[in-house]
Length: 140
Length: 287
Image (cartoon, rainbow over all chains, first blue to last red; front, side, top):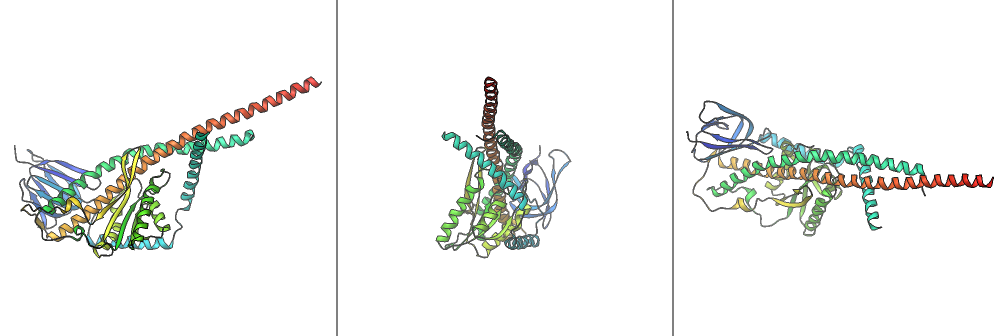
């Protein structure tokens, strides 16, 4: 039996992969990273790409696509923190600006989705009436 | 006594309401299961990233990220308010917003400046009405929240923190305890506290690629985002359970009301028949 290392690939929205491997390849930012068990501690960014995890005692690879993220390597544990979105500094910046712009727009324009809101208010009123009736009855 | 037709109309309208609340109850019940699952799925990421960050603070680094440094004086405060997009979920949003309003009053009294990010329609409306400065917002997240939509609005607050425009960042949401019980909370996001600050130095350090600063910066931003996502997932699970419970009690109430109205209606009908009969009988007797 070969020496193995435990690998977890998780994203904020789900657990993507958890299992053992004896050799893993990650698309590191500075180039492909091939990692064997008992690797020295390493913390790096990962580019969007495919993670290849060798299935122990066979020649097959488990393939996991990730859209970037962070990789933490410990001698007996590899943790891949996968992003769920494509991330880049400029892209994040653009998103933040977009969010600010929308906040300012919302300040000016407050007439949104009136139809839904009024329908909801009507139903809420009906529900409140029923509640009130129940309380009234409880008192009698 | 109201006429038969009036009561019939009232019964019909209550029946319609009951149909809607019953349908909403069932929809909420099925969504609740999924929302709880999503909440569980989100947990491992938070745990893993917390462990990595913990290791990081134990490891030897001479770089101290601003997220980890507590500021001596708190002059202005940021808040991320997580609420639901839609109403009809009992006291869920009003409970958490009452808590937020109390805090806002307290900060105002202390002369602290305040800026907010709203996640969810209800909180957005509330903060605007309350006159808070809303620097960013996300609404209409639907039933499957995606982290991608949060990145921009959250970055507005994180940038403000980095620039020193705010000195502390809080998040308010409804914590999911179980189907019957949800609890509004306000947690501190930044500066990161507690377990992450531990600094008894194990004498080892990571190899950083490309360098320590960029890696740590990225990691901590993701950590904060993961915490916000987790809060959002909990809030959604809370929302669906609160809605299910609220709609169930509304349907039950409607059922009782219908029962009683039917009783009144039958009494009125019988009274009318009795009256008619007695009129006929007395008429016949007179002849």
